[in-house]
Amino acid sequence: MDYKTEELSPVEKKITVTVPPQEVDAAIAASVALLGKSVQLDGFRKGKAPAKMVEKHFHDRIYNEAREDLISAQINDVLQNLDVAPVAGIDIKGADKPLEKGQEYVYTMQFETLPQFDLPNYEGMEAEEEKAEVNEEELKKVFDRFVRRNAKITPVEGIAPPKDGQIANIDFDAFENGEPIADLKTVNFDLELGANHALPEFEAIVKGIPVGNTGEGEVHFPDDFIDEKIAGKTLTMKVRVNAVKELKLPVPDDEFAKKVGYQSLADMNEKLRANYLKTIKDINKSVTQKKLLDQLLKMTDFPLPSKLVQMQSRLILTDMAARMERQGKSISSLGKTLDELLEEVRPQAEAMARNQVLLLSIAKKENLDVPQEQVNMSIFYDCLRNGDDFQQTLESMRRNGMIYEYRDRMIADKAMDLVYERANIKMVEPAAASGDEGGTVPPASDAAATDGAAQ
Image (cartoon, rainbow, N blue to C red):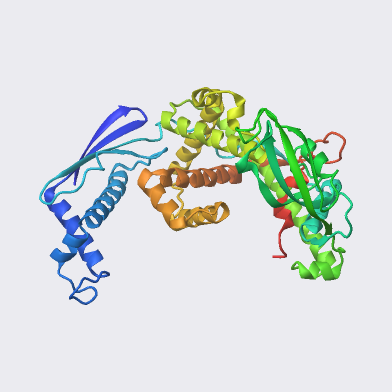
């Protein structure tokens, strides 16, 4: 393999790779040999078919896999030889052409790297950090939520209409000008009343219907409603209440604590408190790290990789869309084009990109790295949480170079921890929060980590 490097800008490189014919032939032969060990063709035992027959029967598969393996290995070799790392993926061009025996193969890779600049002194920086204290009122909310999450659902006797705090099992249809909207018809839906899971007008209809009966009413859907087909419209909703259920809260005693994995009620209370306190400590540490990072950024100036800024902008919008969807709203309801939204979040994206460039530069100076096994494990857990296929996600990230960006975020976190560990941190009393004793207190809804098991 030969390659030629072009410096397109202080942060962007273009690499033209030329693969000689003998390497192309070797890659194809290796792919044939590997596949030949696992396939069976008529008249031959498994793994014993002649290489020419294997190549003929699986030509496209073999050549595609040979090309992908060849390029993947060469990307790693080039990056190691140049001692550079892409900060926002790799744009590969010309790699969609098929390999041909006896012919050289040429493609290009283009990517942005860290800019070169003088790092400020980050040894022994000074910052204040609030001591962690538990807000008893918030801790009580966490305890109550934990008990509620372990409640049993039991049927409610009688035909009385459901009320707040109960769960109504309902069927409903939506009508516009007397005509049903087919894809909005729902049956056997459990709606917890009073929990802000539905529009107030809709809940009001449900709460006026006895069990086994049907009722209807008008519901106006807000302009930013997540389903754009009905956003801004007033529809007639016909509802049938099939049954009413309620949560039967367990008695928080020793027996309950043992059922959910603790040794006793006292042990459960102790661990919930400890986990909640850790949440506050983590928040306070994060605030302090941000102070340290801001100090360093004021002492530096460097060009930003444009693709890194673009990537951060899209991550911001993805997060924004997810938060709006959880609120039953659509990002399109903002009434702005994608370009307008990208421009609007650009200052925030640039700030995030500056943070990452500085931390990755510190990591490079300190020879910080994250083993590939650790990166893969982190991706695996992300896939578990999101319900994605791990192998497909991993291969996709490898092909488009996003695995480098994922690894860089982990390395940046490692660099931030190093700066924090080497700083002189002065612990101070927490500032009084409005109406409460204590300082930075995470809301009960954000303290899921404290609702853990008894480990």
